[in-house]
Image (cartoon, rainbow, N blue to C red; front, side):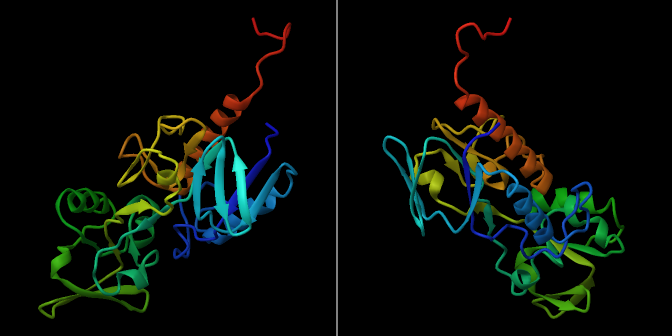
Length: 260
């Protein structure tokens, strides 16, 4: 579909600290920035698509949707929010510095690369049980640590060193923690869209509870919590929402040009 489209890109993807991405067929092990650069190059082929560098700072709705951007207001009747999430990491020194490299959220995305083990989990409750169970499919050594017993996590070469408050240490290949994601942009809230702590509420097509507004990617609350947050699932959600937008704005059939 040839639909005039403007993409606002603030250049801060969720996986910006990860040296490699996985589970994207044909791109496995590639730097995330390479995929983004290739995507932007492809978009240049389509004259009806424009990419604007910058952050949408806010939004309001009267007769249409008005977006507040550094270059001035933009107006649209249809909006797809794919602004991503921020990960609220556990308050353990060292986690933020190693996030995306040796400290990770997803065994599906980064477990195989550290299968030599041991692989640690810093978490508790159901999350620790679930992630620990997945990792035991990769290595027999999956030490579990409660967040309150860990004093710090530091890099030692290409491995991580966990230090407890009592002074004991454990060197591991990687550390998995709960990411605790929250929406990175308040645009949806500005527009009265229903938002939960874990994302924008959408249906199977990415529609929100407000007409003309869709959401996709990690910022959209997944209908099934077992669906992993990953590059390919975000891309698929974007395609689904885009197809629904195109269908929604398509002109009605002309007289005499109706299907059977």
